[in-house]
Length: 108
Image (cartoon, rainbow, N blue to C red; front, side, top):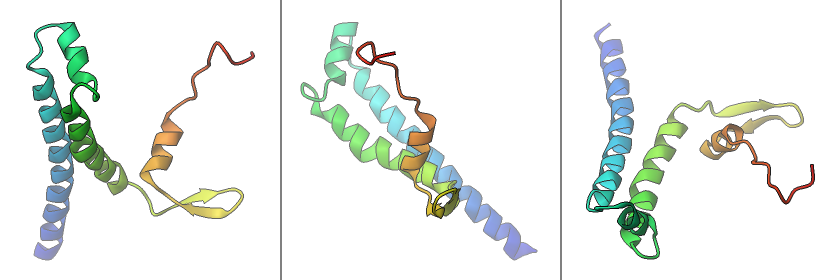
């Protein structure tokens, strides 16, 4: 019984760590924009050409944290009508959650 509780506690700590990593990354990005005094400065701080720090923060802290969080809850395989089953990935979650936008240039 004690081993089961210990395993559950470790799993909870692991999942808590995933959320803490996302939260810490978001805090870093928010503090990056905290120096701005107006909307123009915020836009400049958000442009990775003018402020490479924001790109670095997103690519090295936020993306890996979100990837780990999404990957944690995935089942290893997903049923597929054609192939039977295929390996799950965080990218498949992104693809499934995004609807293609209708463009004015596309024929209706």
